[in-house]
Amino acid sequence: MSEMFEFGARDSVLVIGLGRSGLASVEVLRERGVSVYATDEKAPGELAEPIATVERLGARFVPPAGVDALAARITSAVLSPGVPPTSPVVQAVNRANLPVVGEIELAYRFCKAPIIAVTGTKGKSTTTALIGHLLRACGMNARVGGNIGNPLIKEVIGAGEGDWVVAEVSSFQLETIRAFKPRIAVLLNLSPDHLDRYYSMEEYAEAKYRIFANQGLNDWFVGNLDDPRIAQLHWRYGENRVQARQLWFTLKEHEEWATMFRRDGTLTYVPVAGDPRPVSLVGRDAIALPGQHNVRNAMAALLAALAAGCEPAGLRDAISSFRAMPHRLESVSEIDGVLFVDDSKSTNPHSTIAALSSFQRPVILIAGGRAKGTAFDELGAAIRRRAKAVVAIGEAAGDIVRAGEGVPAIRASSMEDAVRRARELSAPGDVVLLSPACASFDMFASAEDRGERFAAAVAALREPAGA
Image (cartoon, rainbow, N blue to C red; front, top):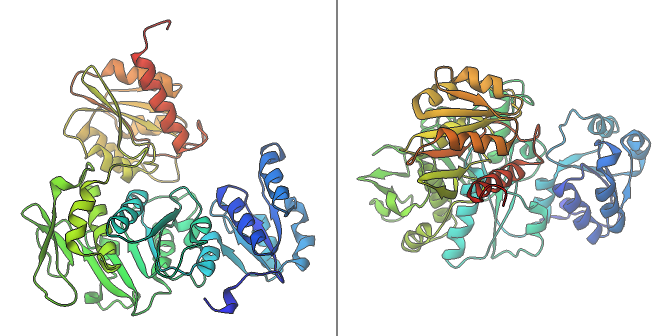
C-alpha cells in the first residue's frame, strides 16, 4: 500500500463504537503509535468493560457529547459497522469535514495480502469459511475474518503477500469503504433485509454493489446468475459497472453464460483460460451441507478458490470434508426420532425460507424475534408449503402467526417454552427447526446466544424431571 494509506504516530483517530470491531481497531491503531480516542452511544452502564479496555490500551474514552469539542484534535474517524452514518456522533465528525472510514477499510489499508471478499443477504459466513477451508486444503495460507465473527483488522496484521485474507463483509461495512478493493469479490444473492436501515431494496442493493466498486481488470468478480438483480450486472446486458473479470454460477443444468453449472448432478466448471472443455468438479453428494442454497454457496466458493489459483483436483477432496458452521442448519440432537436443528443465524425471511426447503421431513418451525423492516408474506407461503406447525417467539410472534395462517401455531414466552412446545407437537421423523427470520435482540444477547439457549433447552429434554 502507498504511504497515503498509512496511519501512524502523527495521526489522531476517533473510533466510534466499542463492540468487537471497534475495540480491535483501537488495539491495532495504538500498536502503530496512533493517538486514539473512542466513543460509544450506548448507556453508560453498558460501557464499563469496553471503557476499561480502551484505557488499558492507552486510548481515551470521550462521551458522545464531547465529540464536537474533540473534532479539532483528530485527523479521521473509524466507524464500527453497527453504527449508522446518521448517528449524531458521525454527524459531528462530518460537520468538522473529517474523513470517516470503516473497520474493513482500515484493515485493507494495513493489508499486504490479496483479499477475497464475500457479501450477500444469506450464506456469507458459510461461503467465507468454505473458501478459507478450500484454500488451506490446496496448500495456501488463508486467514478468515470480518463479519463472520472475528474482526478483519486482527486477521490482516501479519498476513504476507503470499497469503490470502478471506473476508465476510456486510452492507453496513461496505457503506464506509473508500479504497477497499478485493482481488476477488463474491456476491451471493440479494433479497429484502435491513429495511429498517435502508429506505428501499434498491438502496440496500447499492450498498452491496460497493464490493466491486474499486475493482479493475486484474481482479475477479463471482456472481449468482440465478439472482435476477445480480444477473443484470453480466456484461452480456451491456452493463459496465463490474470492471473485473467475471465468473458466474447457476443451478441450471446448463447456461451459455455460466462459468459453473450442474450437469447430471455434478458441479461442472468451464475454464476461462486454456483448455475450454468443461471440467467435472464434484458431485452434489460430496457437499455435506443441506439445501439447494448451499449448493450455490459451494459453487461460489469453488469459483473463488479457482480464481485464487487452486487446482480442480485438489478441490474435489477438500469440499467433502467441510461441515456446517455453528448456528447454520446445525444438527443439535435427535431425541426419539425427532431431529433438532439450530439455524439461529437465519435473521431474515429469505434465509428461513431456504432453511425450510432443506428438509424432506415434516418441520415444526420456531421463528420470531425483532423484525428488520421486511415483510413476512413470502415466508408465510413457505410455512404453508413446508411446515407442520409453528412456534412463534419474540416481538414479531404475531406477524409470524398471521403470515402462516392456516398452519397450526402457538406462541411461546421463552426459548425453553418454545422447545418444549415444539417437542409436544412433533412425532418421530419430524424436524424441530429454529430458524427465526428475525434479529435476536428483543430476547437474546446475539444470534449465537439464541442458538446456545436452543441447544441447552434441547439438552434439558433428555434430563429426567427433577434431575
